[in-house]
Length: 364
Ligand SMILES: Nc1ncnc2c1ncn2[C@@H]1O[C@H](COP(=O)(O)OP(=O)(O)OP(=O)(O)O)[C@@H](O)[C@H]1O
Ligand code: SF4
Ligand SMILES: [Mg+2]
Image (cartoon, rainbow, N blue to C red):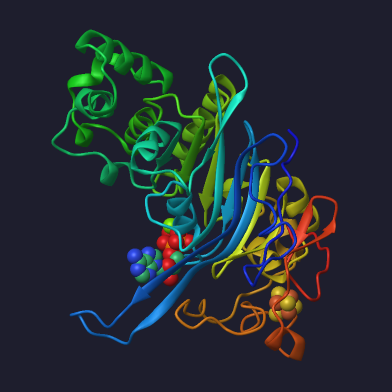
């Protein structure tokens, strides 16, 4: 699998590949350029100090058709907000998102997601879908499996009842479940089975692009591999493109072509999964990698450990200069890190890093 090429963009202005690039490049299924989302908070009837949460601060990337890009970072760094903006579940403050949706007869249709009006957005929903972390929360407990899977077909298509039923059976088979379970309810299933139902629901309209927002984080470790294998099989069978969100690098290692590491609303490193594990260059990536468990106890004892000190700073008031400088073991005492924001630059072909002092290391 060949990694797609990430695109630079710092969010600090029209950076390389930023404002000038306003469309999907090459064979990218999804192109995101300079995506920004700022939430206004406080000052309402609940009171609190008025301010702006800089949740996504200029994120740019491409995902190649049929590929998987992992988006990884600690809680609150803006992964889900990025995904929700891409799907227009919330309105981004600024930025561009372009989807290339494959057409049945060959070729593809270019869709400007941000410019889509209400009608186009309804159509777009069929092409882009999301699978959430907690399958129980995303399924209505009072709806049987059949009702839950039929609902989007009733709302968005003119299928007859028989056609709906056969599509529901087809979807269940696709995710490895017996179609005879249609009359059962979510509480009767295990976590893994519920997540399969969540995936079946997302696949109702043959989407080309799926966001998987921590799809296995709520599952037992023994079940995680089964769901990951299912997602992998579905990708091969249906040619799906995935944005795979995780806070843990260990989970994405074997399922992603590319990995983008995010910190406080920005991508700080982006390259192929293989290269990220073999020669990552950003101090934050090094710290995340040093937390990935190694099965060999000997290797585990001798390996580099980088502890991340303190908490992630508040996105209400992000640090100046490099957003990571308050916790960085390399740049904490460097004046340039405190003052100047490092741009996301291509340090070697296909390897993008935002750091004044990048250094290739193998941590795991
Ligand atoms: N509706 C909102 N109003 C104000 N702030 C918000 C809102 N939604 C998200 N945020 C803030 O935006 C930041 C990014 O949140 P987001 O949910 O995207 O993070 P995440 O990386 O998905 O985290 P997690 O791993 O916990 O799911 C957080 O600081 C969060 O508190
Ligand atoms: S720019 Fe400086 S503070 Fe930021 S990651 Fe690099 S070394 Fe650390
Ligand atoms: Mg999230």
